[in-house]
Amino acid sequence: MIIAAFNPKGGVGRTTTAVNLATVLAGTKRRVLLVDLEPEMNASISLGVRPQQSRPSVVDVLLNERRASDAIRRVSGIDNLFLLTGSTELADMDARLRNVRQPERRLADSIRPLASEFDAVIMDAPSGYSLMSMSVPIAADHLVVPIRADYLALESLAHFLRWYRQRRTSRKAHADVIGILLTMVDHRRKATREIVDIIRAHNKRGVFRTEIPEDPRAAEAPSHGVPLVAYAKSRAARAYVAVTDELLARLPRRPR
Ligand SMILES: Nc1ncnc2c1ncn2[C@@H]1O[C@H](COP(=O)(O)OP(=O)(O)OP(=O)(O)O)[C@@H](O)[C@H]1O
Ligand SMILES: [Mg+2]
Image 1 (cartoon, rainbow, N blue to C red):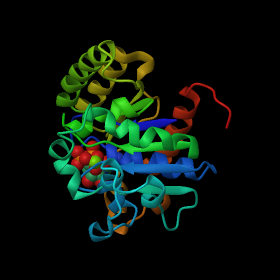
Image 2: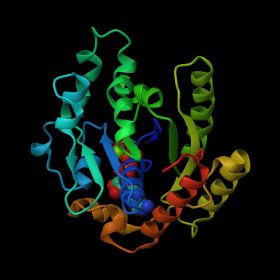
Image 3: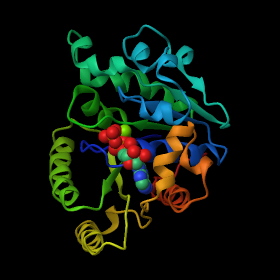
C-alpha cells in the first residue's frame, strides 16, 4: 500500500504527518519506506539526514541512474523505517523529465514496484501543482489530506476536493482520499472551533475523528533530527498514534 500526505496548499502539516505516520507504522513492526519528494528535504532532515548527505536520492531513482535498492537507506535509531531522501534537484524535475513520455507516470513507475517489498510506502508530497506534485496521486493508492483549521484552508479544501474529483473522473489520478486530517488545531480559538465544525459538517466521514493539536514540540522535533513521536510524548505525538490507528481501520482489508 502506498499512502501520500498530499495537499497542493503549502504549510499544512504534510511533512510532519508523513514522517510521523511512517514512524508510528514502523513501530508496529511493519516494514516502512518513506519517500521524500520535496526539494527542501524537510522529511529527510526531520529524520536526521543533512542536505549534503542526500545522495543517492529519489532523483537518482526517478532518472534511472540508480536502482531503488541502492538508494534506499535505513533510518538510524528507528527499526523498520527506510528512507528515499529528497534532493534540491527535485526543483528541476519538470525540465529534467521534459523528454520522457508521460512524465507524470515516472514516479509511479519508480515507486510502485517497491510496494511489494514494504508493508507501507509513505510519500511526502511537495506543495503546488508541479509535475512532481501531480505525479503523487498517480503513484499512490490513498491520500491523507492534512489541512489547517483556518478560513483560507476552508476555501482551499472545497476547491481541492472539486478539482480532485474531476481529476479522478478523467483518470489523471489513481489514489482515493482516505481521510482529511485537521492539523495545528487550537480549540481555544473561537474561529478555529467554527471552522472545524464547518469542515466536519460538509465532509462527514471524510474527516479523521482525530485532530492534530497545535503543539510547539511538533515544530521543535525536526531540529533534533527525530520524529515528533520519538521525541516527545506530547499531545500531537499522541494524536499521530491515534490517527494511524484510524487510518489502518479505514484501509481496505489485506493480509499482513
Ligand atoms: N501540530 C503542530 N503544531 C505546531 N506546529 C506544527 C505542527 N505540525 C507541524 N508544525 C510546524 O508547522 C510548519 C509546517 O508543517 P509541515 O512542514 O509539516 O507542513 P508542510 O505542509 O509539509 O509544509 P511545506 O509546504 O513547507 O512542505 C513546520 O514548521 C512544522 O514543524
Ligand atoms: Mg513539507
